[in-house]
Amino acid sequence: MRPDEEPDLTRPGFVPGLSHRKKGLGVRAWLVLDQTGQGQVVEAGKHSIMRRTGLPARDLRILDPLLSYPSTVLGREKAIVINLEHIKAIITAQEVLLLNSKDPSVTPFVDDLQRRFLRLFQATKLQETRGNADDSEWPNLYTIDESESIDGSPIDDSCGFPPRREINEETGKLEEKEDLKNKDGVKVLPFEFIALEACLEAACSSLDREARTLELEAHPALDKLTSKISTLNLERVRQIKSRLVALTGRVQKVSILS
Image 1: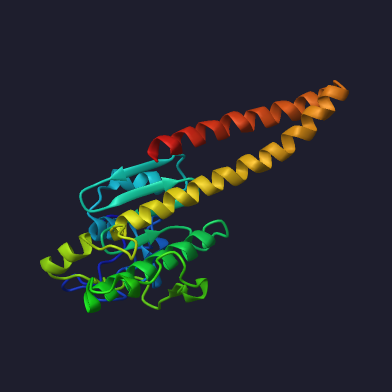
Image 2: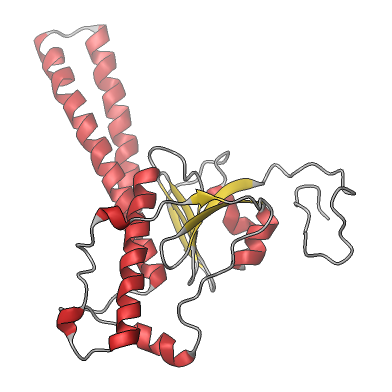
């Protein structure tokens, strides 16, 4: 076992208490959201995530908070790696694994993601039970009350992931999901696309708020510089310009990914 790998509790012959290795530095708390919007917090290391998602170690580096990577979206065979501003996540066909879920800037995104998954789950179940006989019975996928959001809750097992909760297990049902439409005849996006859309929207909203804040600071600073040229006023404008240049670069990067 590598020094930075947590013990594999499923390995034959493993006896708890006999290993004196410390948990690897790569062990972090992940919020796992399933297709119904339910969340569980698990402690998992790099190698557990690699086994769970099929991702190579190099792809997980862009999620490392100790490393500085620009906004990136990596599409792989079994997963999508998301590093967009404050959003660091891995999207698979059945679940979303999210870092920093307790961060105040990430909490609203988690709530929004849970609402979207709940809407998709309800639409899928309705399609399975009633088919397309009466489109008027479809719930509006964008007007479900926010109170129906499901909060993520920690679990006691800190070594393993919660079991995947797959809605569709047979090929016929998977094909049916691909043809899913809402009452307006618009196709409902697959689970992973809904998650990706939410990530992009959250990143764009964050950048928009930052741009508005910077604009509110820029106008008074320019007015002061116009009325009185001083070292203090010049420095203030210079700092705002530097922030604006950096923000513009971040916006362009996300714009390309979008």
